[in-house]
Image 1 (tube, helix red, strand yellow):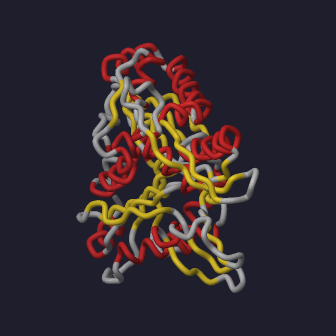
Image 2 (cartoon, helix red, strand yellow; image 1 turned 180 degrees about the vertical axis):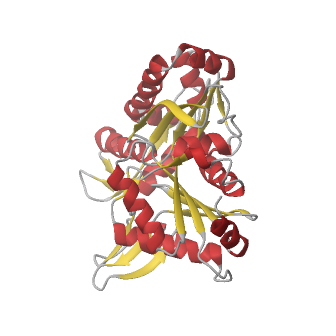
Image 3 (cartoon, one colour; image 1 turned 90 degrees about the horizontal axis):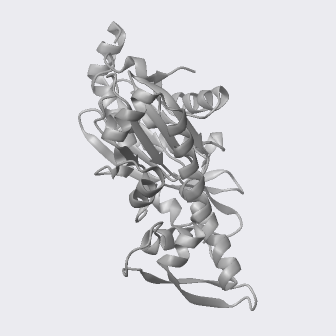
Length: 344
């Protein structure tokens, strides 16, 4: 760490951010994870004013009049609406910093490994314009590995699969670098869209993304549950009559609905394993695949991956927080983790 960064860091509440398509998590150095909010901003399009950010804005999804729009400024893990993303980041930085520090914070932020240089620059610019003094980018699978306490700096192969809202990141990591990996823009959002399409086709029922997400969380699974299949009720609009309608939905039906997105993620994992150097593949066979991200909470995902790859698979203790915990650990020792930062 250079001298000026050492000096400034003594006065600033430096921050780590997992800027996700679905959720944003914020870690403050010395404080831990202090914020977990949906990546949603409610905007009045008639005058451009921001009405709400985070959980309050998410409650407005699908429930607003024409002039008010609940916007998710990130799509597939990258910034789709720059100005809205900047407003959201500024809001989260102010909440984390509490305006008590003498200087702007250094921010370590997780990014998908497969994004372009232009997309990386957009993330960095949005963070700087939102009030950061410096923005250090780290690829999400690397941050997830650090947050999972994997030996990223050692000559030992570790495999991380981070299934988020917009992207699924697959990476084999050793010696502070991603040796082999893939970033596919198929993840939780794609599963939600698959559930919407399934309900349309099978039940002639129109539902929104919030309902699809609820079905996925309440009864979703990707592996047979051995007599423990769950049932819930989905409410929406009957496509034939236009009237409100409710139907019962089982975990088996949701499993069928999300089959294609899950298959795409499994194929990315299999292809990455096929391209992994033999010595690192042997390490992974011994140590197993580590699952992080919100998608790791999908019932049976570890069993399904074990069946498909014949590798040990484990879900970390707090999969949603792994990336932001990794950014926090990096902040605690910037010199040690300097080699893991992504250049843009």
